[in-house]
Image (cartoon, rainbow, N blue to C red; front, side, top):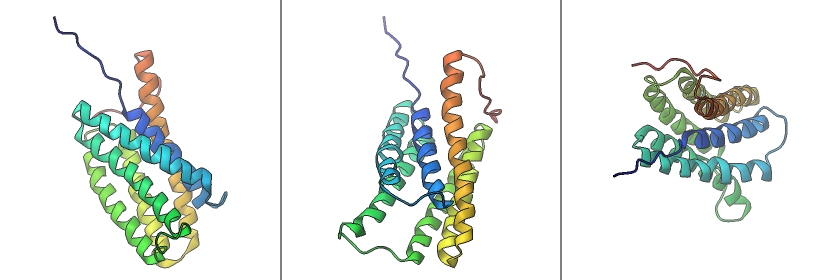
Length: 190
Protein backbone atom coordinates (compact mmCIF):
# COMPACT_ATOMS: atom_id res chain seq x y z
CA UNK A 1 0.00 0.00 0.00
CA UNK A 2 1.41 3.38 -1.00
CA UNK A 3 1.79 5.99 1.68
CA UNK A 4 0.85 9.51 0.60
CA UNK A 5 3.22 12.16 1.85
CA UNK A 6 2.00 15.66 2.44
CA UNK A 7 4.69 18.24 1.79
CA UNK A 8 4.73 21.57 3.57
CA UNK A 9 3.91 24.70 1.60
CA UNK A 10 7.22 26.53 0.92
CA UNK A 11 5.48 29.76 -0.18
CA UNK A 12 5.23 31.28 3.34
CA UNK A 13 9.00 30.94 3.73
CA UNK A 14 9.64 32.73 0.44
CA UNK A 15 7.01 35.38 1.12
CA UNK A 16 8.27 36.07 4.65
CA UNK A 17 11.87 36.26 3.41
CA UNK A 18 10.90 38.63 0.63
CA UNK A 19 8.56 40.69 2.79
CA UNK A 20 10.81 41.21 5.80
CA UNK A 21 13.89 41.99 3.70
CA UNK A 22 11.91 44.37 1.50
CA UNK A 23 10.56 46.21 4.53
CA UNK A 24 14.05 46.67 6.00
CA UNK A 25 15.64 47.89 2.77
CA UNK A 26 12.80 50.30 2.17
CA UNK A 27 12.99 51.70 5.69
CA UNK A 28 16.48 52.71 4.52
CA UNK A 29 15.14 54.04 1.18
CA UNK A 30 12.53 56.07 3.08
CA UNK A 31 15.34 57.65 5.08
CA UNK A 32 14.93 56.03 8.51
CA UNK A 33 18.49 54.68 8.76
CA UNK A 34 21.65 54.11 6.74
CA UNK A 35 22.40 51.05 4.68
CA UNK A 36 24.52 48.70 6.78
CA UNK A 37 25.38 45.16 7.75
CA UNK A 38 21.88 44.41 9.07
CA UNK A 39 20.23 44.98 5.68
CA UNK A 40 23.06 43.32 3.75
CA UNK A 41 23.00 40.22 5.98
CA UNK A 42 19.22 40.03 5.75
CA UNK A 43 19.43 40.44 1.97
CA UNK A 44 22.02 37.71 1.60
CA UNK A 45 20.71 35.10 4.01
CA UNK A 46 16.95 35.56 4.26
CA UNK A 47 15.99 37.55 1.19
CA UNK A 48 18.49 35.66 -0.92
CA UNK A 49 19.18 32.13 0.27
CA UNK A 50 15.81 31.44 1.91
CA UNK A 51 13.92 32.50 -1.22
CA UNK A 52 16.10 30.34 -3.45
CA UNK A 53 15.39 27.37 -1.16
CA UNK A 54 11.65 28.16 -1.26
CA UNK A 55 11.79 28.33 -5.05
CA UNK A 56 13.51 24.96 -5.31
CA UNK A 57 10.84 23.50 -3.04
CA UNK A 58 8.14 25.01 -5.28
CA UNK A 59 9.72 22.97 -8.10
CA UNK A 60 9.01 19.84 -6.06
CA UNK A 61 5.33 20.91 -5.90
CA UNK A 62 5.23 21.45 -9.66
CA UNK A 63 4.63 25.20 -9.24
CA UNK A 64 6.46 26.89 -12.13
CA UNK A 65 5.36 30.38 -11.07
CA UNK A 66 6.60 29.85 -7.49
CA UNK A 67 9.86 28.37 -8.76
CA UNK A 68 10.53 31.33 -11.04
CA UNK A 69 9.39 33.98 -8.57
CA UNK A 70 11.20 32.81 -5.46
CA UNK A 71 14.45 31.78 -7.13
CA UNK A 72 14.56 34.94 -9.25
CA UNK A 73 13.93 37.34 -6.38
CA UNK A 74 16.27 35.32 -4.15
CA UNK A 75 19.00 35.82 -6.71
CA UNK A 76 17.96 39.48 -7.02
CA UNK A 77 18.78 39.91 -3.32
CA UNK A 78 22.07 38.03 -3.66
CA UNK A 79 23.08 40.11 -6.68
CA UNK A 80 22.07 43.36 -4.99
CA UNK A 81 24.20 42.55 -1.94
CA UNK A 82 27.11 41.70 -4.25
CA UNK A 83 26.68 44.98 -6.15
CA UNK A 84 26.94 46.84 -2.84
CA UNK A 85 29.70 44.77 -1.21
CA UNK A 86 31.98 43.98 -4.18
CA UNK A 87 33.24 47.56 -4.69
CA UNK A 88 33.96 47.91 -0.97
CA UNK A 89 36.00 44.71 -1.15
CA UNK A 90 37.92 45.92 -4.20
CA UNK A 91 36.49 43.19 -6.45
CA UNK A 92 35.01 45.58 -8.99
CA UNK A 93 34.01 49.19 -9.44
CA UNK A 94 30.63 50.40 -8.24
CA UNK A 95 28.05 50.70 -11.01
CA UNK A 96 27.05 54.16 -12.13
CA UNK A 97 23.72 55.55 -11.03
CA UNK A 98 22.48 55.13 -14.60
CA UNK A 99 23.59 51.49 -14.65
CA UNK A 100 21.71 50.89 -11.38
CA UNK A 101 18.67 52.55 -12.96
CA UNK A 102 18.76 50.00 -15.78
CA UNK A 103 19.30 47.16 -13.29
CA UNK A 104 16.15 48.23 -11.45
CA UNK A 105 14.24 48.89 -14.68
CA UNK A 106 14.87 45.38 -16.02
CA UNK A 107 13.68 43.93 -12.71
CA UNK A 108 10.57 46.13 -13.01
CA UNK A 109 9.84 44.79 -16.49
CA UNK A 110 10.33 41.21 -15.28
CA UNK A 111 8.02 41.88 -12.32
CA UNK A 112 5.36 43.39 -14.59
CA UNK A 113 5.29 40.15 -16.57
CA UNK A 114 5.16 38.18 -13.33
CA UNK A 115 2.21 40.34 -12.23
CA UNK A 116 0.24 39.06 -15.22
CA UNK A 117 0.92 35.56 -13.91
CA UNK A 118 -0.91 36.44 -10.68
CA UNK A 119 -4.20 37.34 -12.35
CA UNK A 120 -5.59 33.87 -11.68
CA UNK A 121 -4.46 33.95 -8.05
CA UNK A 122 -5.59 35.67 -4.87
CA UNK A 123 -5.89 39.44 -4.50
CA UNK A 124 -3.02 39.78 -2.02
CA UNK A 125 -0.56 38.12 -4.41
CA UNK A 126 -1.79 40.41 -7.17
CA UNK A 127 -1.21 43.42 -4.91
CA UNK A 128 2.30 42.24 -4.00
CA UNK A 129 3.37 42.00 -7.64
CA UNK A 130 1.63 45.22 -8.68
CA UNK A 131 3.25 47.15 -5.84
CA UNK A 132 6.64 45.52 -6.48
CA UNK A 133 6.43 46.54 -10.15
CA UNK A 134 5.74 50.11 -9.06
CA UNK A 135 8.59 49.95 -6.55
CA UNK A 136 11.16 48.89 -9.15
CA UNK A 137 9.98 51.58 -11.58
CA UNK A 138 10.09 54.28 -8.88
CA UNK A 139 13.59 53.26 -7.80
CA UNK A 140 14.77 53.23 -11.43
CA UNK A 141 13.21 56.65 -12.00
CA UNK A 142 14.95 57.96 -8.89
CA UNK A 143 18.31 56.75 -10.21
CA UNK A 144 17.69 58.12 -13.72
CA UNK A 145 16.57 61.55 -12.49
CA UNK A 146 18.58 61.94 -9.29
CA UNK A 147 15.44 63.14 -7.50
CA UNK A 148 15.77 61.89 -3.92
CA UNK A 149 12.09 62.55 -3.15
CA UNK A 150 11.20 59.76 -5.61
CA UNK A 151 13.45 57.35 -3.69
CA UNK A 152 11.81 58.39 -0.41
CA UNK A 153 8.34 57.82 -1.90
CA UNK A 154 9.57 54.47 -3.25
CA UNK A 155 10.75 53.60 0.25
CA UNK A 156 7.30 54.10 1.75
CA UNK A 157 5.70 52.23 -1.15
CA UNK A 158 8.24 49.42 -0.66
CA UNK A 159 7.35 49.13 3.02
CA UNK A 160 3.73 48.57 1.98
CA UNK A 161 4.83 46.02 -0.65
CA UNK A 162 6.94 44.10 1.86
CA UNK A 163 4.21 44.23 4.49
CA UNK A 164 1.72 42.76 2.02
CA UNK A 165 4.09 39.83 1.33
CA UNK A 166 4.56 39.25 5.05
CA UNK A 167 0.77 39.39 5.50
CA UNK A 168 0.26 36.72 2.82
CA UNK A 169 2.92 34.51 4.42
CA UNK A 170 1.15 34.73 7.78
CA UNK A 171 -2.27 34.25 6.18
CA UNK A 172 -1.16 31.06 4.47
CA UNK A 173 0.31 29.66 7.69
CA UNK A 174 -2.57 30.65 9.98
CA UNK A 175 -5.31 29.68 7.53
CA UNK A 176 -3.73 26.26 7.09
CA UNK A 177 -3.09 25.73 10.80
CA UNK A 178 -6.61 26.70 11.86
CA UNK A 179 -8.25 25.12 8.79
CA UNK A 180 -10.35 28.23 8.26
CA UNK A 181 -9.90 31.78 7.06
CA UNK A 182 -8.13 33.67 9.82
CA UNK A 183 -6.60 36.29 7.51
CA UNK A 184 -8.46 36.82 4.22
CA UNK A 185 -6.50 36.88 0.98
CA UNK A 186 -9.28 37.50 -1.52
CA UNK A 187 -11.01 35.22 -3.96
CA UNK A 188 -9.23 33.10 -6.51
CA UNK A 189 -10.12 33.75 -10.15
CA UNK A 190 -11.06 30.61 -12.02
